[in-house]
Amino acid sequence: MNSHILDSKVQQFLQDHSKDDVHKLAMAKSPFPGIEGKELANQISAKNKSAKKLPTWHQAKAIYYPALLSIEQCSSENTAAYKARLIKGNSLVDLTGGFGVDCYYFAQHAETVVHCELNEDLSAIVAHNAQVLGVKNMRFIAGDGLEFLKNSKLTFDTIYLDPARRSTAGKVFMLKDCTPNVVEHLDLLLTKAPRVIVKTAPLLDIAAGLKELKNVSEVHIVSVKNECKELLWVIERNPSTALKIIAITLNDHEKKFSFNKGDEENSLPKITEKKLSGYLYEPDTALLKSGAFNLIGETYGLEKLQAQTQLYTANQINPAFPGRIFKINKIITAGELKKEKTLIGNVIVRNYRDKAENLVKKYKIKPDNHKFLIFTESKAEGYLIIDATIEQHY
Image (cartoon, rainbow, N blue to C red; front, side, top):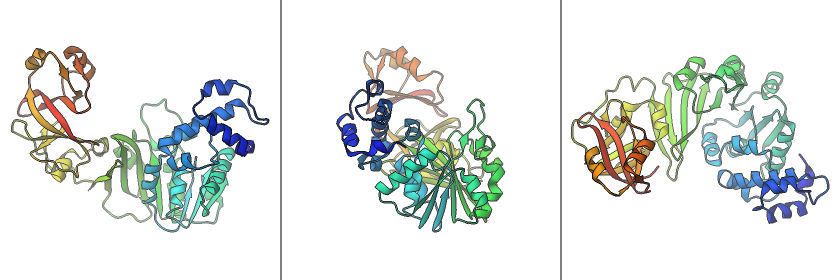
């Protein structure tokens, strides 16, 4: 951490040049002794990157930004705020602290928070920023979080960690291939805290994760604007018998879909036998990740189009539904589509015999934010094209 960057003249320079070409700035000679041009460029790039993702940091003065990669990898504020609602008790340790966004929100719920970070420079940066942001209940450990836990006599109410994949070369993502190795050290973690929260990338298969981990009480699938951001595995020393799967969408209005593991196997799909009319429902990616395709219909009073088509229909709008809702204007055939001289609409393909890009090219379809052409398959009508307008966004 270069303390010269916090000088008032340097901070003013960064503000004045926030829209400059950072590549040119990185190559140019720095106007300040003790600071390289690339350091100035990184501060500007990282701050600009945080504008939407980290508004609290972006709006504060005298924030010190780490390498751009740390900003790209850290949690957004809305996902961090959600995680903080999952912790229990008064004390928490984050074994993989990073830029400290999660810890900032943990500190608003717990009395004491310990931030562990192997990178000493990053640890110092987070400590400085915490002071700037007025956080007074955080302690900082510049070292290996797992080693700190092993060697400390302290116990905590909640342990949080975000294991990193050691290699992305393998096709299968497994927790045992991450650092820290949660699978190997889970017994230690549960002796140090009755509640452990593990964050993983959304590409981890839920069934595979449950095979690797014991004592899982909840799995939270978190999405923002139909992009699955993370999986949160809540592990307890004394878990309840029913494992709960929770799909949460953090958009303008937070929506939740939850069920007990096993409920999906005991439910039957309700597939429409009628010609389509009314409204079409497209589940958010978090719901699809949950795999509870039958329960989605059961919960929101919907019928599936076809067994392998993850689209649903109903005669009314249910605003509680996490996903998009379209008004079905009409059903059209491929022959009718060919006769149209000007086709406008965003193309959606679900369980259809061609790809979206091919269909756009074939029928010369121009995009539109409100109108949609949905190519899909239903049990009642086979392959079909739905002319629709959007009624509810993500």
